[in-house]
Length: 158
Image (tube, rainbow, N blue to C red):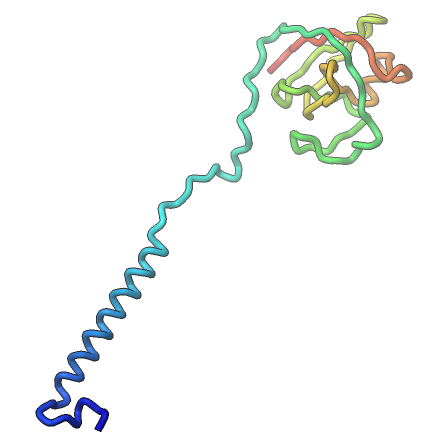
């Protein structure tokens, strides 16, 4: 008795049409909801092989004067900012902004000794210092015992 199909004058056809309309409406709503979830605009992302922009090459012959320090045992064997492994026995250095691979002539102003070093890391991170050199470079430049010295840095190739 509570069923619509049992009421006098009501056949099964109106119930089916009503069910079909509800099913169609629900299907359309579900499709719209799903379409709304997937129709997002993709967020532009940097390509994984693109790192932060490299600093512009400095003109050959540019010079800086300031304090140099060295780094050694604590970082030996660790990865540098350029991605290579730090070797405290190599003639390398860290500079805040020169591009990796730049060759610089570092001259110890206290004794006149000079070396050509390759920039392969970032630093120094101590105010007032312009370059961190490897242990070997500090020994060859003659400031290993003191730990720091005044130097002139000349950019050779960028």
